[in-house]
Image 1 (cartoon, rainbow, N blue to C red):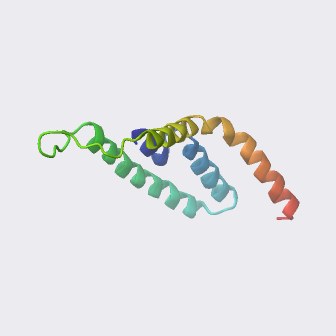
Image 2 (tube, rainbow, N blue to C red; image 1 turned 90 degrees about the horizontal axis):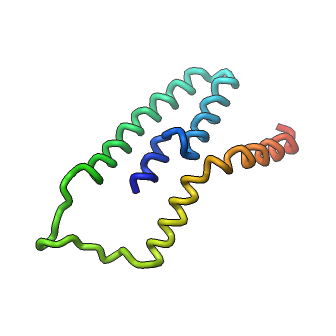
Image 3 (cartoon, one colour; image 1 turned 30 degrees about the horizontal axis):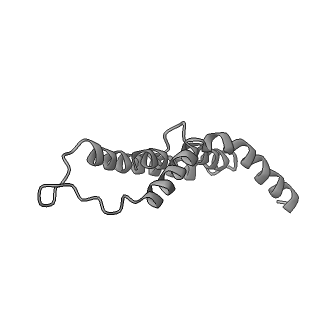
Length: 112
């Protein structure tokens, strides 16, 4: 969960950082500098909330119910889905450039 929160916050090695970078860069190159500043400010505010969530998840004492931790949702299919999502999140930085090239071809062919 911490990995996904860092990705949403836009920490550089993850894919969402590159998405935010491309969107803000497109806004600046399109002449929407005020919009780019608003997006950057909003991203910084959201980063604060995501990092605050990580602090509460990993640096605070867990809440125990009747003296033991309760983990009924930790089944094998759930662990598999979370593992695949984590690996995809980590290696998304490799897929960013080919994906941008494919999208650029589609945009060019559309005439926009």
